[in-house]
Image (cartoon, rainbow, N blue to C red; front, side):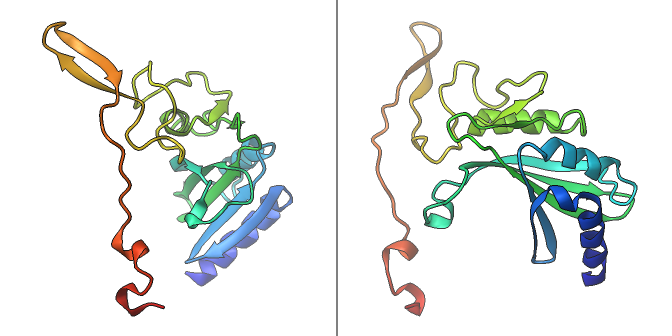
Length: 199
C-alpha cells in the first residue's frame, strides 16, 4: 500500500504539483487542496492524464468549516470535497477546494469533466448554498423549491424556519411557522470533564 501511494504521490507532484496548495498523506490516503481558480484545470488534468487517469468521480460534497472540530476555524468557511477513483490504476485521491468568498461561495463546476458531478453539485448547492459556476441546471434537489436557506449550514436552526402539515379544511399541504420549542441537549460526554476517567 505504501509503495502504491508513493507512486501516486510522485505522479501527482509531476503532473499537477505547480497547482497544488497542499498535499496531505494521512491514514493511507492522499488529499490535494487547490485554489478555486485552478480547480477546474486540476480536475481536467486528473481526468485526462494517462499517468493519473481518474475516470470516475465517486462523490462530491459541500462542507461548512465554521466551528470545525468545535474550534474556531481560520480560513474560508465553505469547501467542496471530491473523491476520485482511477479504475485503470486502481487508486483513489481526495480533491478539496475552498470558496474564496464566505458571503457568496462560488467554485467552478466539474460537470464538463465528470457527468456524475451534476446531482452532487446540486445537492451541495441545496444543502450549503455553494454555487457551481458553469453548472447548466443548478437548482434545489432535496428541499422544496420555495425553501428558504440551506439546512446543512451550521448557523441554520435545527428546527428550521417553517413546518408543513396537511390541513383537512383546506384539503392541501400548508406551511406555517415552526411550533417546536427549541431546546439544547448537551451530550453527557461533553458535559462531564472526567467522563470515562479522562482528565
